[in-house]
Length: 337
Picture 1 (cartoon, rainbow, N blue to C red):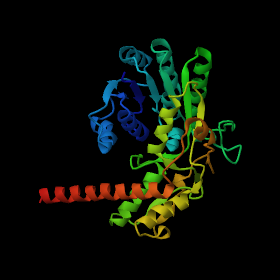
Picture 2 (picture 1 turned 45 degrees about the vertical axis):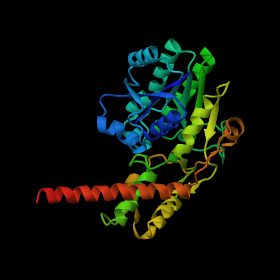
Picture 3 (picture 1 turned 30 degrees about the vertical axis):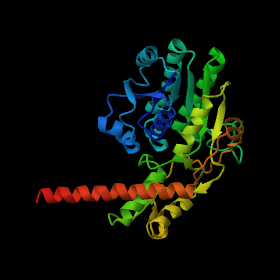
Picture 4 (picture 1 turned 90 degrees about the horizontal axis):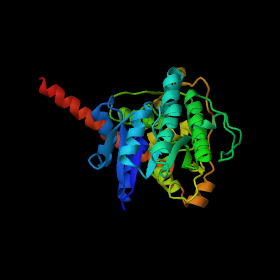
């Protein structure tokens, strides 16, 4: 019998890759969308992956419990993947209440809707390595204490613990993936990896000469989103729900990541990158590196795409995007004489 999956955050990077993966596994995929979002924006990543006509969209909002109850009642999903969040760390300082409402209480709303309408479903909560913040151990595992350093991380930590609480209080199949940084050509432009690859493309194609960044010495454990969504699915196939760190086990500085991207385009990073204090976070997370050994042992999962391959893929995709923008601008100028 065909399984039915409900994905919140469908229009984001992870939601799009997860939808594609589930479709290839024979699932019927439903995606929660807010009608306040533009139709073009909602479909952009799904179109990039060629699946925009294969996913059924359902109207709802993470901060509207009644809509989530209705969706669960009418659609009876077998699996629920909560990827919705205000997920840009920097914006969480300027929008702390929105971040808390969507990222923290939104998860609670969805768990409550599941408890009331589909208690037999399986639930995935997208937790984040940002919860470790001021790291308490050199390498972070499922047992490492959390020390969040942004409103986003605090909200994610609430969502993580409320997921654990619903699992233990109501005997629900709820698992959390503590995902370390994961990127792709579908990453939003506000995230540093995509900001870098878009900047590389614009410099290469002559649109600009400089790229302004923040802390170049911050270290992150970067993987590919297409790999990481497979871990999400694997968690919900287990008989016993649990929490897992999903990471590559390798940490790299922002500077090194930039060098990979610029080098792929035949450019020298030092000629183009400038540090702008405006992009320094109020409370920086200096280094993150995950221990994915539990995921490998229990789920049989490990990252398959290294940082170099991923950055080259992202640069190539942005060269295509920016080149297309240039062509459109030229065509517009010619059309108006």
